Amino acid sequence: DQQVKQNSPSLSVQEGRISILNCDYTNSMFDYFLWYKKYPAEGPTFLISISSIKDKNEDGRFTVFLNKSAKHLSLHIVPSQPGDSAVYFCAASITGNQFYFGTGTSLTVIP
Amino acid sequence: DVKVTQSSRYLVKRTGEKVFLECVQDMDHENMFWYRQDPGLGLRLIYFSYDVKMKEKGDIPEGYSVSREKKERFSLILESASTNQTSMYLCASSLAETPTPGELFFGEGSRLTVL
Image 1 (cartoon, rainbow over the protein chains, first blue to last red):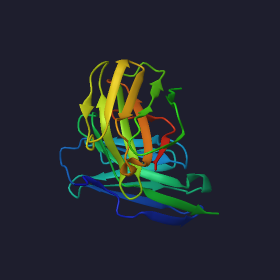
Image 2 (image 1 turned 90 degrees about the vertical axis):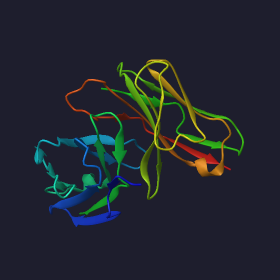
Image 3 (image 1 turned 45 degrees about the vertical axis):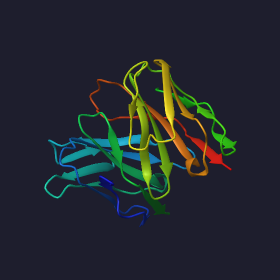
């Protein structure tokens, strides 16, 4: 059973606009959430994270929002740039040990 | 910078062959992981290790084994490769204690095709 779900396999956004990537989870025990970015033929790289005691974490153009009651998190990228085109995976963990990944959302930023 | 190196980027093997995928990290990380990535399924954990000679099963360990004889090296073994093991294999490592729990450092991946 998929404990972390990304229901949108792909997303296209115009350059300069906001990209919103969504992620839902089922296990209320998850206490740490992360987003990874993956370019073709490369391994995923860590992008941003959030602890379950927070509802927002911001790092430059990237902001992650956590809604624990809805078991939902989202990644906002603003403004979107063509170099942001990649596959984005959300991940969740309990005590930072085993991590559960979503299926990924392929973001295309159109120049 | 942390570097996780996977020995082979591309491999083609035949059904029934024994396959070794090697992974080395250079930052003295305690934790190491093997994932496979398949379209529509995301990253699924095969095995992980918190210390030398320790190993734990992940979500899909069937058909795989691992070896961690040294802290920096974590090997994934397919005892008898099958076509359903055709996939992208990703190795990752992390610190046991970190201000950013869950920050994994991934290798570039090994794309295995089993004919």
